[in-house]
Length: 300
Ligand SMILES: [Zn+2]
Image (cartoon, rainbow, N blue to C red):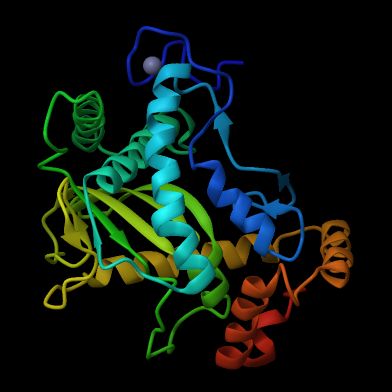
């Protein structure tokens, strides 16, 4: 298979293991454990059941172990308390910055090979993406202090409540709380460029270029930083982008085949929403409360 890389994307010496996760396994464990059903579906290909996310040859054993340490730290200290008890950490620091950087590093590596439309980006944008990728490699190898001038952001957007739901698609809560996905985004005007990783309620962006609205809230640094600084602001393009992503996900679900719908219905009946699937039920309930039965109507 030519899906992955011949050499480890980080050390570039040893061969990669066959099944490096782009998004860490702990995210998929949580999705399965709390989804009420033991199967996952990707919005991009909802007819396809996925057991635990995208896996391709990316990292060698030793680099995988190194990054695995920061994953475990993030999972135990940040992710699990946030999804299980709605606890948002007050501050995060160098280890978490490293983990978030590794997420974008893997995401960019994967998408450089698997973008459905490689001509979407201008040659200037491609150069910027590549130079950021190399900057991330330097940082992860301990050769530089940060990935500056690229900026990393981490926001617990699926853990709070959004006051004004007008204009939001009817799957919004399911999307913002539970969806897991990756993307490279660029505005048509060429002002904004970055990589995007959403894992459950956490949204992370690596902003490679921003000549649009300023974005200060949620930026993280390789030192202890407040997760949410009160005086910051989020740019509108981020919300527009997330709303578009939620719509895409809804559309993809609308295109699902009748046979798959029957299987989903069957799984749904058997699903355990009382205990294990409570988080999924809460998200479904929030969409029902906000948008009524329309949230669950299938387009024919
Ligand atoms: Zn390696």
